Each structure stands twice: as structure tokens, then as C-alpha cells.
Length: 190
Image (cartoon, rainbow, N blue to C red; front, side):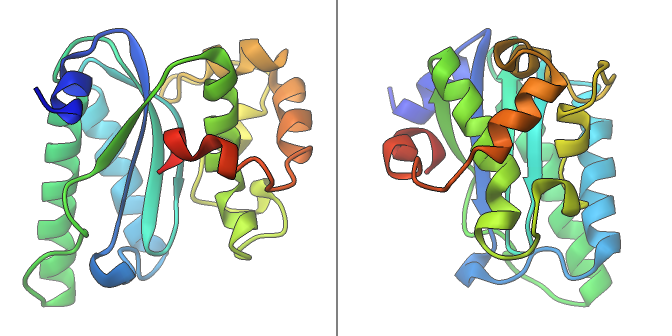
């Protein structure tokens, strides 16, 4: 059994899921594309046994932190979202062919420590590559929800918030990020 198959069959586990454009090309060309992907993702999420805990959409890739309640949930979610997005994107851009580099990549998050750090890595992605001065400046992520005091219906980040001591605690944890943890987190983030 492949590692990816084992992940697909896992239940009650967190996963870091990511993908990028073929040849590192942009997969979101303007704000409407980001909104379309977010809307599509949240719509499909209602029908699958998966919870979204964190996300960021970047011009040429995306990162998701997902909790799979039942086996096959992430596989079903990603297939529906990515295939539908590619069809709509290609029709809007009058193009054919692949948009993503391949099927999504997936890494199991196997500890509370890793859960916190993967979430922070996701939210700091726009800052790390110079697209935003702070995570709260990037409009295509759930960072503002992650640092809010109350719960959100669509984004189930209560596990991350609880580990960080609430929304303010998570905000402080993210603001402490200096980018030096990337090497130690490689097994979880790529």
C-alpha cells in the first residue's frame, strides 16, 4: 500500500494538503479566481467528511490544513474541487490542458506541535514570499478567522486555537515566526 493510500484511508487525522500550477504558473489570475476557488471549496466541503482548519491561496499554489473524519474524504473533496476549478478556469481563459502540476500532495500532521507549526507556516506563506507585510494583509486565507475570538461555521480551527491559547494566543504565535522553522518542518510542509 502506498503512503498516499494509507493517508486516504486514515480517519480522525489532520493533513497538510497542497498543490501548485504546472511549471509553477499562476492558478489564480485575478481576485475573482480566488473567490471562485474559495466558494467552490466551501460548497463541496459541506458534502464530505472533512473539516477545513487553515488555508492560504497563493498566485501559483495553495495550502490547506484538513481534518479527515472518515476515510476517502480528502480524496473526494480534492477531486471534486480541483477538477471543477480546472474546467471553469480553462473555459474562462479559453485554454485547454492541465492547470495543476499533478495530483495534490498530502502529509499527515502527527502531533500537536506539528499542527500548530503547519498552521503557522500556511498563514505566513504570503509574508515569506513577499506578497504581504503581515498574514492579516493577505485577503486569500483564513488568518483573520484563526485569530478571532469566536468560532466560524466554515473554518474549524478550534483545535489550533485551543493549542495556542485562543485567537490572541495564535496571533502572538504567528507573529513570533522568523522563518527558521522551515527546515525542521520539511516532513510536514512539503
